[in-house]
Image (cartoon, rainbow, N blue to C red; front, side, top):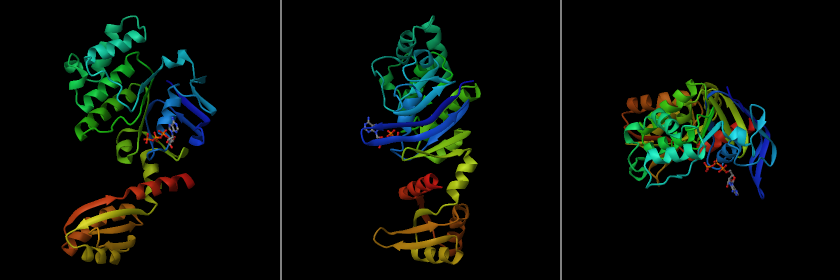
Amino acid sequence: MSVLRLERASRWYGNVVAVNDVTMTIGPGVTGLLGPNGAGKSTLIHMMSGFLAPSAGSVTLDGQPLWRNHEVYRRIGLVPEREALYDNLTGWRFVLANAQLHRLPDPEAAARRAIELVDMTSAQHRRVGTYSKGMKQRIKVATALVHDPAVLLLDEPFNGMDPRQRLHMMDLLRHLGEQGRTVLFSSHILEEVEQVASQIEVVVAGRHAASGDFREIRRLMADRPHQYVIRSSDDRRLAAALIADGSSSGVEVDTREGCLRVQAVDFQRFTWLVPQVARHAGVRLYEVSPTDESLESVFSYLVTS
Ligand SMILES: Nc1ncnc2c1ncn2[C@@H]1O[C@H](COP(=O)(O)OP(=O)(O)OP(=O)(O)O)[C@@H](O)[C@H]1O
């Protein structure tokens, strides 16, 4: 059982404060690190993996400081966001090279086990350059797992994956969490995080904004107004029907963009209601999507609450 602990940890780059006075504890199981772009997720993960020193405060694994601590590095696996793969190597060679770098007593056995764990045995002798995005991501996880670390950190592991690859990766993370490992992954998408993480830590603008299971985080977010863009076969008629219901505080018909902009006050009721109202009014829905600014405002609400 391994526990990562950040105690009033900050990190700045010149004048930029990337992580600001963060205290959090990450235990066994799967934790999602959720936050918008630029929130400081990568910086936090790099500090947790011992690659980056905190400018202030401390980052420890089971009480041991991580920075420049080779003993502790052995217990951590990192899957970075950027592709750091050698396209000409086979998956097998790539994972084996990592096992050798770790100077494991039986690198072949370790590579075989890690490749099996990520379900890549049948493709291990193909060149990495021929792999799909999901397969590349899994082989990266195998290299991070080759020394059987108790802690696995993944930076945006679902980026660029199609839904099937995403489900496969989610199963893998769940499985690693069930084995008792401490697994932490970052994402800017709540739906992604809540499907796999039992614990969610939210960061916004370098600060620790909220912590809890997905129900608590959902509740915090649901209490805030959400902005939606709706496209339909008759925006004016739909706007009138939505105003009559009262679950939205503002409904604006944007004739230039050809859409409706809706401020939903009761998020749960709103998402349930829109299709019903549309059906009753005889309006066909083409698109209902939250705006990015809405997501940012929900996140920033969490910081100030
Ligand atoms: N090496 C660096 N030098 C200067 N500023 C940096 C450096 N690395 C990160 N930053 C800044 O620190 C802040 C946090 O960046 P970080 O990459 O940790 O966020 P993030 O949540 O991982 O975002 P993203 O998902 O976009 O990578 C950003 O404002 C970023 O521009």
